Length: 403
Image 1 (cartoon, one colour):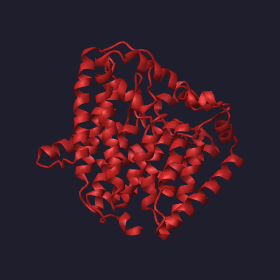
Image 2 (cartoon, one colour):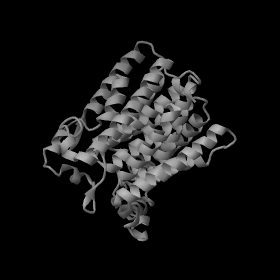
Image 3 (cartoon, helix red, strand yellow):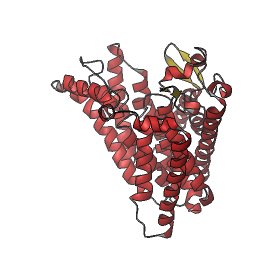
Image 4 (tube, one colour):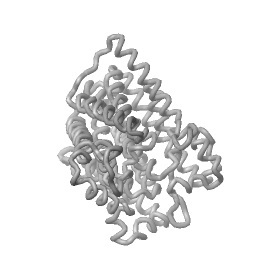
């Protein structure tokens, strides 16, 4: 069930329908089934490995479970917060403890690689043939959304000027972009050397065509962290930098020459608009100013228990503060910092790839992390769990052998 959960959430994350305004996706259903199966396994005697990160994640889930219960009693519960901060963390516990052999980790990694290829290939077809020409209602696009009309995708904040963002099976360019940031760093670490450059070029090109500034920031952070701010004592590290430079030259020339919408998006906004993060900064300022004098709101979050102004749904950290206050925010930041540090010092390439993915996603989340929309929370916690499962078996996976 773990493999099915990973595959569905990577390849067809929007497959399903909506009940009211709530998306009921195949990926979410399979994740729930995986958690149920995992629960029975743990009840049957499977042990949980309580690492420092696991402990922090379970504390976050428990705290937000209580906090969400209070919201429910007050009639203010939000399902996306429950999934992202209560249920989702249990996917980490499941994956990090259930994948105990090198074979299982290899299967999970291959799902990410094949998923990346399928998603990028579909994006290319979508761009060449048109959105509706390749759409499969209920599979590559939510059935309820598709039934709203031929321009359903423009209702998903994809319109940029007279065109649209590239979104593949994710229905929104920002959502595709941030999830590629989680997936691709693992893919790059494990594919064979001759495929690294094509994969990197495809990643940069598709991420740029999402026209998502958060994805662009993440791409820049990834290239910097992975290829620039690294030790260059080995030939492999020097070759990696050369790969990055070639990828940037090829992708940059192609994008700016053949796709003017990238240029328009990059240079079409004034400095004030960019610094205000499309209006998100003023709302964040209002949120902080309206809650700063209320200790309960500050520590436990204003959602449901205190009046507040503004908001910051797109900015992951601000939304976590809104939902659970400084307690939830501090726990999430501690999880991110501890995870990145632990994974990047691992000798296993899968773990290292996950470490880079979590790092660049954390950077992009300062603009928009898409953390409350499927499949982001599910993929975030599952991929993080995969990283720790791989780190527990250093040198045992295919990634460690390929170099």
